Image 1 (cartoon, helix red, strand yellow):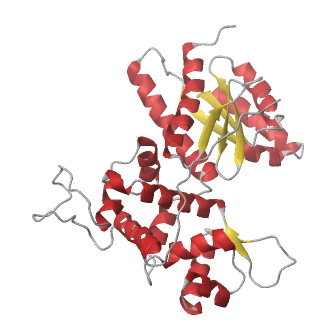
Image 2 (cartoon, rainbow, N blue to C red):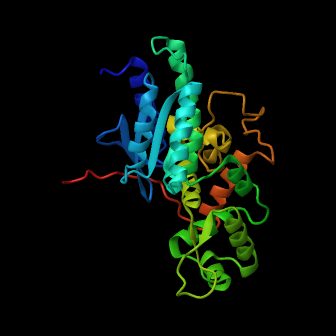
Image 3 (cartoon, helix red, strand yellow):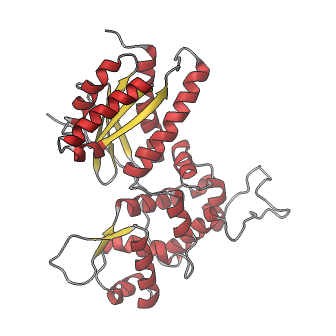
Amino acid sequence: MAESVEHAFLSDSILSILEGTSQSRLYAYKEADRKRFDFACDLATNWRRAISGQTLWKHTEGIDKDIRMLLSEAESEVLIYVARTTMKNKAVLHEAISDYKRTGLASKLDRLRVFWVPEDFDADSEEHRALVYSDLQASVSKDLLLSVVLGGITARDVTSFATWSGAVGLSLAALAEVGNSGFQNYTSFGKRVGSSAGPVKERIIRLSLTGFIERTADTARSGSVYEVSPKGYALMDLCGRLSAERKKCGLVDPGLRYVCSLLGIEPENVNLWSLFPGWVRDSSPKNWDGVGVPIRQPGDVSYRLAMEIDAALNSWGTSLPDPCYEIPDVVS
């Protein structure tokens, strides 16, 4: 049976959203062999995630089969189900999920993400397509891109990190050093970073409490051993991308701009380029005072993040990644 226009639009939209945001270079995207599914792709940072998905539009009786087929897929770490929101559809989906829980297979449900679409969606309407795409983009961004692909990082995490008190740049320098060489004790770590043990200890505790670093499973080593978490790597990649884009006067690429918007960052207000000699004033007067100096508030999160990046690079000698993830072709 030929799929409906709505069915095709929804499947294609999920892939389009994931591919579009990958322009940020914070992760790599590649469409995969769909096999039994309506859509599939691979995403990668310093790990690789296979994603498979099904779309339901007309046939409620297919929900149970779709869910069981998705949950039986062993090779995909993320499973997406896009479905028409009706009471009958929700009831059938609830029953299928309840069956899995009753049979002791509840752990398989952790991979499943369900996105509902209004039942009166008409793919022939340009207005409907725009609204549904926007809603899907918001849902996928929250429940997949931020929570899974970018390690669970939130706007609150970025605000907390950017506004910590103390030596500017030391937080990012400490995070990068944990990524480069690990951490075992404050004294040796402080020497590597170029700081005394006291400020370093404060940063390590904060990074740990906010989930940017985490204890390793290496029980053979003594002391507090840390490594950068997926959330921490996402933050370092984000700072590296903003640093690499500093010559663009805040006019970063659309994918990076979109991720920044999810995290409460305004690229124009980051303006890392304005902290360096040789910057050029743009033509818009909205961010400038009468003498051509950017107007910034002390509590501006974006500007504080710019200061953190600049100080880490220039005061603490930190090297930040300019991520360029790739997904190699599978050779059979």
